[in-house]
Amino acid sequence: MQQAGKQVDIHALAGHSRFNGFHGLVLWWCVLILVVDGYDLAVVGAALPSIMKDMGVDATSAGVMAGSALFGTMLGAIFLGTLADRIGRPRMIAVCVALFSVFTALTGLATEPIGFSVARFIAGLGIGGVLPIVTAQMGEFAPAKLRTRLVTMVFAGYSVGGILVALTAKQLIESHGWQWVFYVAGLPVLLIPLILKTMPESLSFLLKKGDQRQLGEIAAKLAPEQPNAAGTVYVGASTDRLHDAPVRTLFDAGRAFSTVMIWVAFMTGLFMVYALNSWLTKLMAMAGYSLGSALNFVIVFNVGAIVGAIGGGLLSDKFNIKHVLVAFYVVGAASLAALAYTKSTELLFVAVFVVGASTLGTQLLAYAYAGDFYPPAVRSTGVGFASGVGRIGAIAAPILIGWLMSLSLPIEQNFMAIALAGVIGAAAVSFVNQSRAASTQAKAARAATGEVGRVGGAIRPASK
Image (cartoon, rainbow, N blue to C red; front, side):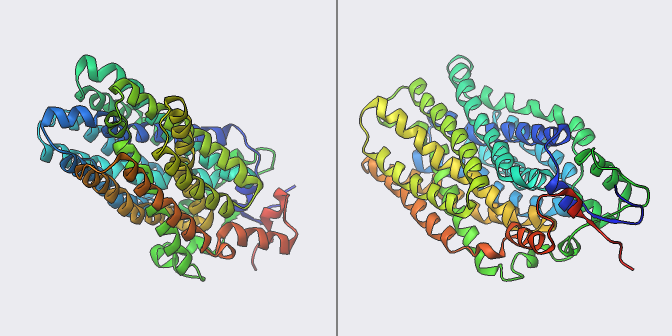
């Protein structure tokens, strides 16, 4: 039984907790937010052939139009993800949802490339900003044994959004025009009041504020079986006092080289994802498939991504997440090479499924890996910067592939260019020093103090 005057490490309490309804609420919101976020990001790829025809633009210009949102996602991931650690995650999630819902809907009103690109850029700020925030949110509240699995389940919502785009596009584009797949993206703005009311605040943010009342309320929900004695003081690790210089902290404690390698891995992973998100429908159409058939490939791609993300999470909870991630990058490169030379329609669907599992699935796992690597107090910042810098690859992808297509090269060479990114990503992750990861150090600390496997290990005597 807890005694008054004790200090409780709130992060350790969360890590040792058992999955319950409170965790389920956080999981529900994070998944739902990424479903609508994934829809907003993938919508351009599904509508691109119709947009090109309607606006009379070539492949290179269309690549720039698609890339405008990705430039926004880079800035959003860096600045909004970092700002979430300073003003609170629920507030920043609400801002991001407002940005990507309203401005994606406004994109449907665009009649020329510049207006389209401006609206997509602003929507991209919210699309990119929300990704690192929900990763950090789920990672902070998740039980340690389920953390990678739950974070990858959150990102599976991103692929569900991609599937919704394909299903919606098949119905709406032919009957009402490409604009309507953008208009429906405005509906999630209605969720904002509920998000602000029910999404819990970040533990690190509450520790910074010294809000013991809210910390006590969350502790009771995290571990309802633990008595919450009067006078209990909730504390965090020393890293929870690093809010004054969170960006610099990414390079402290021997993390500098590994941080750069994580950024490189994100650049290559996002290059693969956005090259396929932006151009898969068009590439399949160039291969002779109708719009409906090409969108079926998009559905299979995203189903594969869900299987890859959840499967990767299961493997990562059992094995070293770094080794699992390296293997996924390698499989991604190999499957893209196979896709380039697959001619049978049936085998092509299989290849696209594996490509989805090992490219988008790989990137979703990479988010979980980055969240696992950084301390809780700078987790949004760490994932945000990785995601933001990684958007360099995302921005380059549609433009580069659009340029390659304008050269009228064989379609196989487009897929091989995307596959090369997977090889580079595997090498980058291999160079990350796993001993510097926050999860590795936390396990070592618990083992040293005999706290592994029991919630009571979260309790420490009060300082004198």
